Length: 199
Image (cartoon, rainbow, N blue to C red; front, top):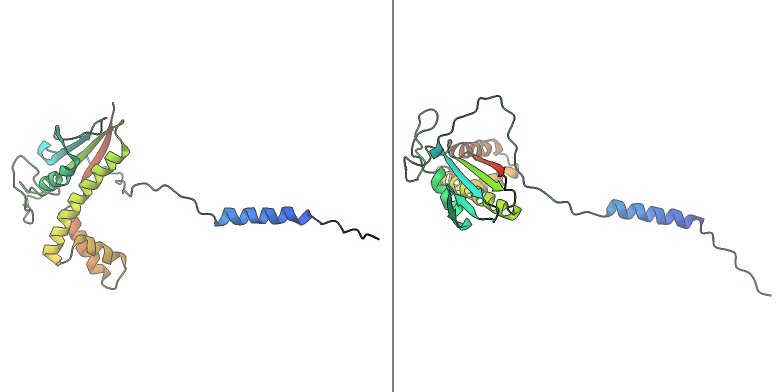
């Protein structure tokens, strides 16, 4: 006589499938697009500052991703050196009348007075590629890094880049390092503004 097998209880299968689904949802990692790390300026009630034309370096990206600096077409590879020459010119004084004794530029009276007054303005056409804008920004940041590294090496025998790396390690002499980083940043403050222009 053939014996019948008891039916399999499938009631708990749905519970197991549900638990597995939750497990995979919780443990799966998703790629998250990251933006550019940029500090937004704080809201200020200070009056608008009048900037002399010689203290403003205009960098324009047109709709064809061509780069213009002071209305002249340039190759993007030239931008870092152009920015260095502009920021480090030292052709005048700061707001308190002090000359830039650490500047090694040409001291051209037609170019920027002081690193604390040298503003770089980026204007990007709406049709320009995002990649071109990022490359321009990268070259400008590279110019500031170059100048800060040079000043830090001459003053503290350590590059600015290495100082920032050490500071992130949170060592015991952190306060001194932070103070030095702040002084280097004060010598070459990052003055970049950007805006979008229409087609």
